[in-house]
Length: 364
Image (cartoon, rainbow, N blue to C red; front, side):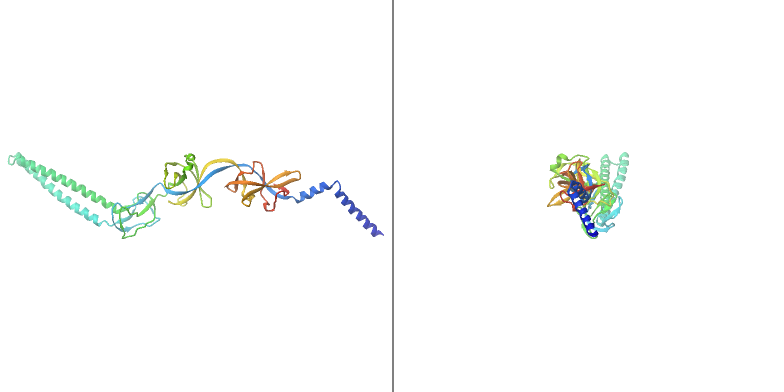
């Protein structure tokens, strides 16, 4: 009997609990259960950040001082004193062309000059002798004038011969090719024994500094190009290398590219850039305040980008899926050109667990 009473008491208490749960206290219990089931998430309030509007172009790095070494005379290459990549000073001899033929011409001209000088010396003595004879009444004035004319002619011949010898001697210097300024030697496509002419490219010398980025901008953008336009030089993965500005705008359009050449100076170390190197250049047309969201907060479904926003409802805070239009990346954020406003609370954690309408609990 005691056990039956105890069982009856327990059953009564259980029924009473069910009655209480199904009575007026039901809404509070459901609220507690819902709160317990809400997913804790982190949120970030959307704010405006300065987002640049850019276009990316392929630029060519060039040196302000870059020389193509070509001979001024023809002949056989006999010596090459440098190799590609060598750092040379101004005046350093790079190569030598066989000067024997030119040296023979100089020697021949020197002999001709000596002959003309001997004739000049003889005529000078003859003028002096004829002058004395004429003054002593021994010879006529005509003889003196003829001697004087011969002297003047031989003097002119000697001076012409001297000038020719100097010209030929100076050309000997063309057989030694030297660096016009300090720089780095480029590719050397020739070899010892090659016959070269003024049309032959022997090598190049590029200065180690004062590099520029050559950027061709399409003519449709001609109205937007201006001096001081910001330019960002980036790697192939988009990492920034250097920020610079346009300091030259061509007044002509390149016919082959149908673009306008602009130049921007590069001040990074020479190890980062090489002459004729291709780099990516981002031209910053303007910078405007734009909403941004973390990259990790964005999901894509069927090619459309979405974010989840923590929204307040009568039942509490829930995750609302919202389609957004993305712009360029700014660091670890996306610029948002449509779908979000300043002040929206974007969910940044637990994205993979969310569906539209999921109860969430924002945490700090």
